[in-house]
Image (tube, rainbow, N blue to C red; front, top):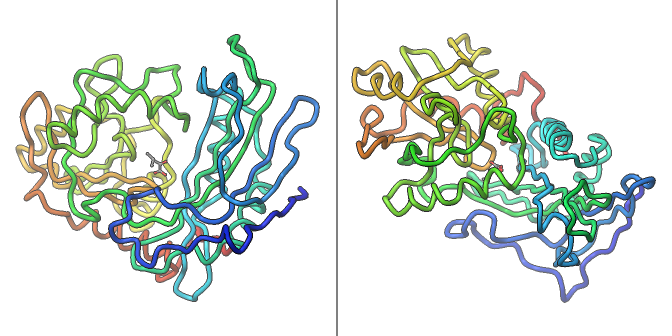
Length: 356
Ligand code: COI
């Protein structure tokens, strides 16, 4: 793929924040972005790296009406050796292609797009932060851009990648968050788009999250749509439980996002010889387990959230504390090891890091 390069001028050049403490996740963007377009008979074309800036979209662009789109989230790290690296980037572009199939979007050439991302990152490498616990969050997006408001599959698309230096996703950092189990709303149904990384899933979760926040909880835990008993995931991450020393996470049923951090936790846990189970988990099993002490930890896992301990689950107006409401040893072990690999501080037996 040939990429046209248009760099920022001296006046357009921005200064990365000196510190990311106090900077809200995903609100600062680097100097450049990557973009390319797709048209019928042409495929992907007009690849360019250009100054970060507004998109030119007609108000009739199909994505604005019918939400035909996909997005991804991955991170670049400044690693121990002083070099820069990505964490399992192919997994993201492969997932984007699976979302693309469900959302009728054109697929990407994983290697070409990874190469384009690396070129963008090399150009904006000074935006990869080196403060503890920080990284450069990468947001690839595909949008339907045909100018037509009849409902159909678009014949034109835009793909872009933007970069945002970030610290922790939650203001609590690595401290436990309190989560409300949603009784009133559901996120995804069998046969729907729950497994796809597409904006509609997140738009549909906003109201529940807003209501949970009003009651003092950070996020919502979703139950299955049919029986409202099986645990699915949290708004911005997958969920794990430590039940009788076994690491348990809901199996992928099609309505759960197949998280890359989720997959890494499972693989890491098995590598350590822990009992790791992907199975259906009911809310009753977890709440009873919290009461009788068989559930000792609950934590979330996601690219933005990394490993995020849960201190309290609220269900039907009742609060259930997880252990002593503190971060547990299993969550700490996963957090330290995963971030150890991501920052090149621990050996990487799986080959998850990819140098930029
Ligand atoms: C991520 O973890 O990268 C996501 O895309 C979740 C998003 C809600 C920030």
